[in-house]
Image (cartoon, rainbow, N blue to C red; front, side):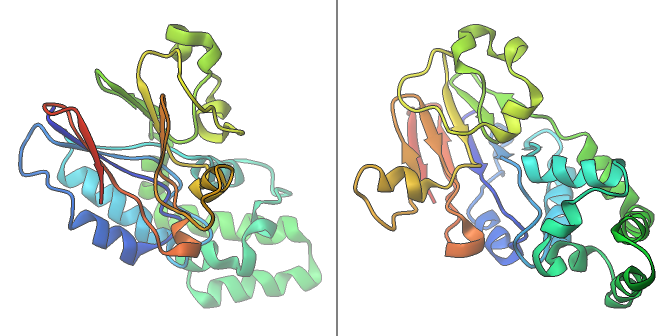
Length: 249
């Protein structure tokens, strides 16, 4: 592959995704694009982002990979778990659920809370989400946790870097999607780790660069999450394996 693009956490921000995709050129069959996960929550259109990512994967099945992030895993845990799950309570303003379901369905479910419990609301909303978006949910279940090339390792959050070359066998699923704090500096995994998950602003702030949301790069890592849902900044990485150069769009 000559060119590899990486797009980090989208969090329901569909216009920013559409703009980013205008800068991704997959006309060369050797080019590829890696989505780093966290498509849902926080922003206004989680369903729109998930659908757009799935459709883009379908349009370029040999060139595009969509990884899972912790927010996708939490959504699936809510769907699969007991009805007393607290995921719904963390959905501020029900912004994520509102992107999946009609207003009247949500209002009716919430009205039931007066005569029932959060368990009842969870059960109703989960049933409706699966009934209306079952194919999308099943696609979400199939998302891989990492992707690697000869030079880079793409992941949502990180890997067990203390495991060195054995990182693939030794890293728990939760580390792939939820690792925190991030590893910094040289890495022993043998490749550059490219991740989202961790907002780059605080990483820059530690080095005296305040209010900076550009990609954070050190000897072993590239962190891309510009917190697009708050800042409007969506950092897209472009790596050219022929010239061995990295640029950002």
